[in-house]
Image (tube, rainbow, N blue to C red):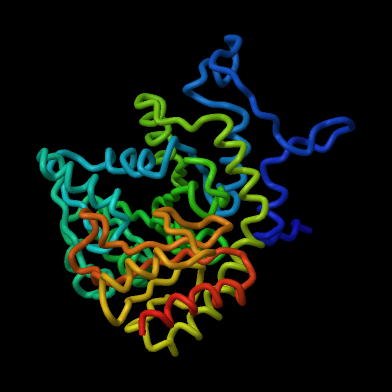
Length: 355
């Protein structure tokens, strides 16, 4: 009788562990090595590391594929864009992580690719844009507009055109969305965010079920050298062990805050896809009110990253690289795992002063 598959929370805790033997450590040790004795599979520190492998096994099992870890999320993004041939077309959401959009703009300015930015909520528009594409890049939910894509419909159109389909799953995590089960080709993460989860490690990851694609991406990583630090891989794996608990608490807090924020007169709009721990609000009085909010709280931390145990927020248009179609008064909120009543008291006090 086949073994029953483990549920995601159990996979997060158990995958990537050493074999359980007497006196064996429960956790994979940090292997600080740039050089290995010849004759094995590793050979050199740029090609692999046992600590990376443990992290890759765990995240790969959670996403349902094989994982490669990278020095950062953008290192993973740039490796994927290397799959696109000279002058070929990349379709991407107009509202995406600014690092992704800036990489595409840089590649287009040098004649490397043609970037076609679309409204990801308009499925017909995206499907039409896929017609001659080489790669279709999806975020769902998008950053910071929190728009949700029809992944199966877009994937079908992209594959019909012969394009790769990539989903940035940083916001949803493999606990809330598993794009490989929708037959996409590649999942990418900024593991800096929810995967590591403690605002102390910079890492990226790619996951795929395609063995040939995995080998191509692995060779690109080896050649470019965009490999993670060993300590960072160790921290990311340690963070991954509690991913299910952190996501569950952050999502619970986010849903309750959304309910209350929708009733506050200082808020013009609340954007929430119905899952996860990221909420975007648009202040009724615009950019100045949004800036004031981010300066007045005591628990909520004004910071540009997200996905940690602490609650952070920022007005996204303070960055010149943010899309002009994002409202000036939009504040992206990364809801943490603190007590929701304390989070609300801190927000409400500041919001009341803006009415």
